[in-house]
Length: 406
Image 1: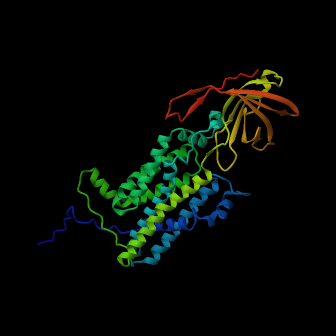
Image 2: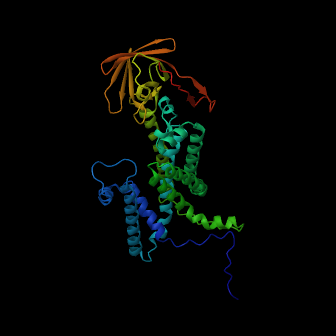
Image 3: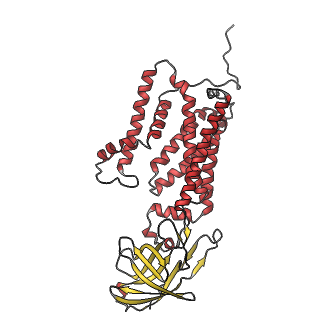
């Protein structure tokens, strides 16, 4: 009588023979651990891209060449590994450890960016100077950052989803749920980075790749579930070697690092870069109501129209922004950093010389006195009318700044 080889629903599915893809993933993770996208290959990538001088910020062509060089180097390592392995079964024995490394690596990075969003650190709320920045003066990334910063709920929910998927990835039994959540989350992040030209597109693509790799062994069962067929349990990977106390200590050390290091990173960020209130009450958005300087012809009137002083500062001086009347310059705004020392307001434009003004306040009215090209002048300002949009508990205000120079 012939043997019955039917597989029951409770029988573990046969282990698929690990191949080139798993070995490539292991080599890619190793390269990432040794240096993000292979820092040692940067000179070669810059040479191939024809870049000279100081390294460019953002994602220059050399960054994409570097991505390809690392992918090719990982492929070369995977092919060498496969040729040396033969039928020794190294890849099958290493497969559980490779997937553990992929899960922990993805969870670590998701914790970093997720906590930043949960604590509303990655995209800070728009300041007074942002409210005076014209739409056409913003690049795509600046527009995205201000939009997300204006909506704490959107930023918090996005960060909470990243943190939740990271927690789920820490344990093998919940890794499937973590990968199922991480794939759409990272796909959306990558879409935003591509659409708004954010300079971490390659980093987001790398995280999405890890999420897909973690999800890959579960795809047959997911397909069976979609077709309403019985799923087959995957074989449990071998546990950690050594005695039980040593295994527990190793788990606590690894998971503690994955959990604590991103939190420490964010605490350091808060201490160093979180905005702090300025120690004076001059911050706000002002419109000019009087200017002692004679008015030139209307087409070339470069006197101030609006002045915005930020209410918070980082480790650097707070920002200011001025808006001019009918100035022929493009754009018709100026920006820089300011300091208040007693009755002196110092405006330092980007790439320009400091301008020191004496300030005095009478009620809500602010008077600034200084010199313009050696000619004394006095400017009177009043708080710009604000229209409260009642959005998210007064988190975002639109300032109306009509031209009122005299």
